[in-house]
Length: 468
Image (cartoon, rainbow, N blue to C red):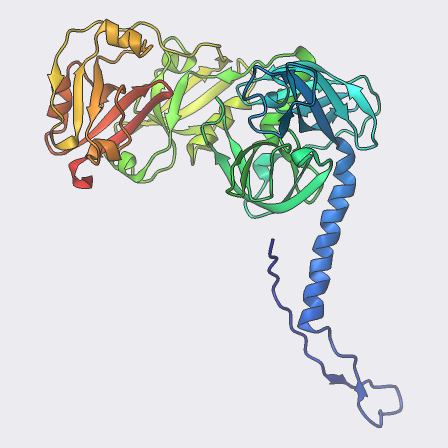
């Protein structure tokens, strides 16, 4: 990486000294100040020393995890280095990374590193090798804890990732491509990222080089504290993502203690507010999380939250972006009382609820039956038809919607708004859609706010013929 440093300039000059009873006969030359080049080298050396200090401090807490898995699992090494043909017949070998979570042998790593493993070995920085057993996994955030029989290990220190600043230096440590204890440097590029790789996401993004085999290793700050657990890379892009320490530490503690995770939940799916969505909802800014759906009988449902509400704060903490809501809920214990502020139809409401434990199956129940009818694409490019029980079964849809998208014209406003064949239209301009004609009626001015149900979740989108 090319490092850019500010050039410092110094001014060389002369000073005179006065002594009691006598004046100097001539000016005394002063040694010239350091040149801009030497100053830059000095500052670069200081940064280099800082990296080296972090490596010395943190590396003893980083481990290499070697696994064997059954050959028939084709994607077992999806995110970390693997090779076939050198293990027992019918198996493959691979390696990932981990970080010592507690002195008594608990190692925090990614779930995908050990998920299908039939044999796990942990190699410490001092060369000792231990057989490991899985103590617990959390597939929703892709974390796992494995346990080795060892004492007095150098456990890593975890930072508060919520206080981390975008732009600060970070270091990734791990075993990329099976090369033990490799360190790469970069910056914290962004926070609160979602890339649809896991069920629950609040990633830290970094340009510190993360490669196959880094999975499960730490992303650390210049204080040598773990900011996150390296997890996902975008191939060839130089961009990597880490699970923030605020989540990783909480999950690690529960997996170590109970072997499973109890996670707070309120029962809403939500999305970012785009400028178009905010305008359609009568909101002047894009701050907040737009509620796309509410699970029946969930804490949010019992408290009166409805799709289309914009959650603006939780316990008086402002929700600027939608990940703020996710973080605010996930970091609360199950059963915690929350004070929620929402914007609905231009009015602000104060609601209260208690978090519940997140259930395994979050799908809404109860598909509604309906007859058949069709609506032509029209100016928006949507082809709609009534959602029959047979179509609902084919789509594995159990939500409240009654109208399904049977086609989208390429290049149309609907296509540009991200609508796809098989989507279910639940609302048009905040009103329930009973039949395809309801969408046409709501879009008579060439623009409509739709709420869509899809297998991956619910969301709002604005479709406008002005965008065609």
